[in-house]
View 1 (cartoon, one colour):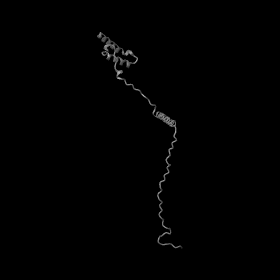
View 2: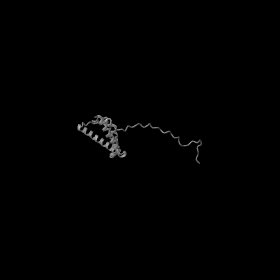
View 3: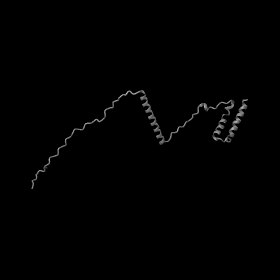
View 4: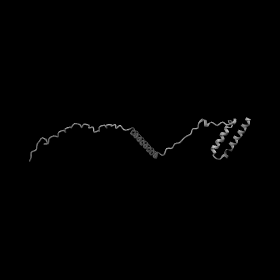
Length: 141
């Protein structure tokens, strides 16, 4: 029978702590900056490249507008007219009594605008305007 050691020691040596290697150094893998070489191109070459760049920008802009219009719907433009004060003032007439009949003229014009093509609805206002003009005409003479 083989002999056993007493003492609880094992025959294997104790593990050594792992040797630490130095931390890896950062490696710069970036390419060197590009060297600009001036070929001394002609003036037309510079203008030509500018024109080509402008065409590309314009085309890209048009494509983007079309894409937005397809999603949002077409753009609509509404023009509004603002009446100037000269157009809003009533035109002076040769008759001196135009101020006296201004209220009747306005009522008749409003009736014509609201009734459309049916002028018979405005007969009352027409008669009032005619009476006003007759009476203001007789006052002047």
